Image 1 (cartoon, rainbow, N blue to C red):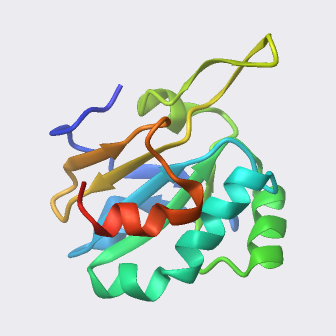
Image 2 (image 1 turned 120 degrees about the horizontal axis):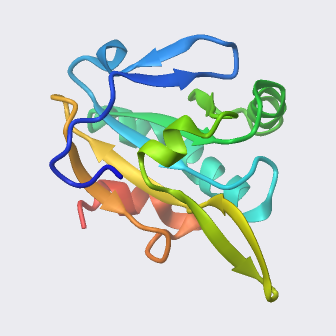
Amino acid sequence: MIQIGDKAPEILGLDQNGQEIRLSDYQGKKIVLYFYPKDMTSGCTAEACNLRDHIDALNSNGYAVIGASVDDAKSHQKFIAKHELPFPLIADTEKKLVEQFGVWGEKSMYGRKYFGTFRTTFIINEDGIVERIIGPKKIKTKDHANQILSDN
């Protein structure tokens, strides 16, 4: 489980086009690595669209956005096309990244237990060190960009 002060892994995974995403590709930028449960669901769509709508403010403050879920590349391609998302989405189908970051675990909905991704955002500084974690109970899907920019 990755915590504040830990170095993030160099290789994050493969994006929607099968391209490897590496920390070193983002030299000089802070990375917003946000994990979300599922493409095309209401909360995940709200979060992605909020980040999309504020991408210029995020970029001008030195942030690059990368999303990650356990959905496959084809699902990510549809999600990106439908909502015109200007950032890559990691297809973590083997659950390596979600497990490495400690955001995969047992969840419960309507009394049913299942395994899934905890909505969590990691802010990784220019040196590849995790400097902030915004946890599942704190994320506001419709105002996530402001949460990132406010440094709280």
